[in-house]
Image (cartoon, rainbow, N blue to C red; front, side, top):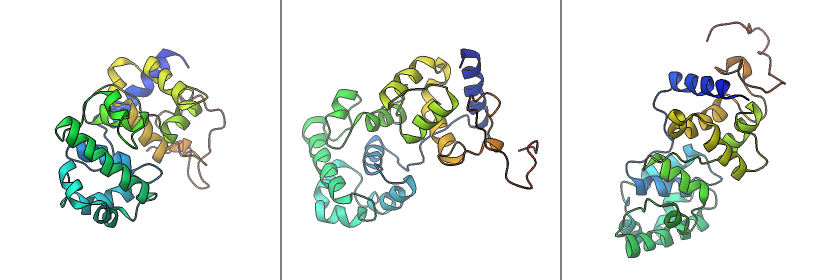
Length: 221
């Protein structure tokens, strides 16, 4: 894929959604950190249901520590792997209180040193909470990058580095959100909705999905 195509792809994403953001609900960097930590192998919808109950009661590291692990589990028990996640949340909160005055650090190294926080989680926090032009490659971004050929790669690290290199600088900050949303709702895993895709004419995926029976391919959307 050439630079002109990539530029037009992200121009269209921007035109359609000028201010994209995560679908996780949060009001502070700490709330976002915990929500992302809880979202591993879980849906944003499921995490939001849990945090809507948790955050009014405990939404700072100290408040969660005061809550205790058993009480924390009662709030997040509907989320997959909640036992492990509860341990990581408690350990993370202790580190934030002991080392950072209860604040979320703004460096990748510090974030990745927190229990349960890997590169992807750190990238989400750095991008969404602190405005850094990072690229958190999840399954959606990996699929879209390879299928469209925007930034093909054999693994998430390769795709991340190619996106950071290839995405036009003016769109880099928001690219992560656009690609996730595109993969979540249009360029879905099993049967991409190519007939309803705003970048279908630019995408280099050869096996475009035809519109369902009765739906005209040239119907305006």
